[in-house]
Each structure stands twice: as structure tokens, then as C-alpha cells.
Length: 271
Image (cartoon, rainbow, N blue to C red):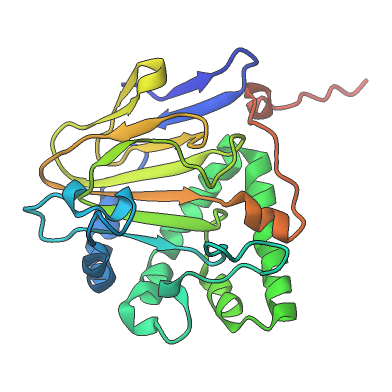
């Protein structure tokens, strides 16, 4: 399949489909780097009775040597700790004192990969790119006011315009919508590995995209129900996203939907 955009009736962009966007050497680097995260990934595979679908052991490939699902969040609001009474915190794996788990090493090692995804965001959704970086800058300033050493320590190494990341390894994704995002934003899903044919499905619109290694899908995950089925082989998804309450906590306005006109250069004619 060729690169594809899905537009609504107002020519707003709801989805980008970019097959073959990740070169093979970068795919290999990403997959090989996951061994650094082996310990936290293995610990993440929990009972479905206690955790949501992202950590449901039934959804992981039983035969896989490596599997798991972890969130990396430089700032988020824990359940029951909402603004304005609380300020955002770093997720557990990124806290000071947790460096031994390999996550900090992985963030630094994948710095170029995250920067390239950030650059792609600047092209496909310029407003989101600008407000995303502004939110991180303001968050860094606020962290100093809050005397939050965890946030201040991780942000210099966080080389992505997105403020959150989910890593899922050898995991089936049931149909769902992402409730913590914002309909006007485009989450970015990067898939790498070595696995047979796999499809990315949006059941509401009866859309089905080949989800081969090296594919990037950027979509409004809060508006479009989506899912990915089971496959053999090795498969990982890096899901980049943002949280609207973190933007609001640092005074950054939420941007509009990307429109096809945002991508068309303005021609200035001098008389």
C-alpha cells in the first residue's frame, strides 16, 4: 500500500499511514535496544485481574522470548492526584534511583530515533509539534519551582516532542480508543520487528492497513477506535502520545486539528 491520509469532511487530517518509513538499520537498532529493557518489560506482564489490557498476560505472545508493556512518562497525573491540588510526576521507571533498570540508558541510546519522530511530527502536525515542545519547556521551568528533581533530571535526555511513550513488545492490541489524549492530536505508532503479515484495523470506518515492520501510523487515537491482531515472530510498537492535563497544568493551549491546508506552502508574490 502507498502512503495514505484519511481526511474528514472539512479536510482535517485524522490519520497518516506511512509504510516503510523506518529504514531496516534503524528497525534493527530499535529491536536490539529492547534487551536493555528486559527487566522492566518482564516485570510488566501481570494478571489481567489487577491491571488493564496493556498488561494483560493473555494478550502477550506466549512463545516470545521477550515481551512486556511499559509507559515512560516524564510527567503525568497519578490516579486521585489531579490538578490544581497536585502537580504532575515522573512515572516510576524514570524516577531518580531507578537508573539501574536500564530505562535511562535506553532513553539516551534511542535519542536519535526519538528526534527523527519529533521531526516527522513537525511536518505532519506543525501546531502539535510547537505546543508539544513549548509544554516540555514550561514543564522544565515549573519543575524548578516545584523543586521536582525527577522531572528536572529526565527532561534534558527526553529528545521527543511527545511527552509520553508506551512500549509494547509481542502484544496483541484489542479495539480501543485512547482516553487520555486529545482528539485534535495525532498519536504516533512505530512498528518494528520480524513478523508475518499483520493488519492495523479501524473498525468504525472499515479501514484495514498493512502493518508491516517499519510502518508509522499517526492518528487521532482519542477519536478513532483501533486495534492490532495476533502475530508470530517478534513485534514491538513504540507509541508516542501526549496528555492534555499536563499541557493545561503548564498553561499551554491545546492546538487545533491538522488540516490539509497546513501542509501547503504559502506563496508570496512581490509586486
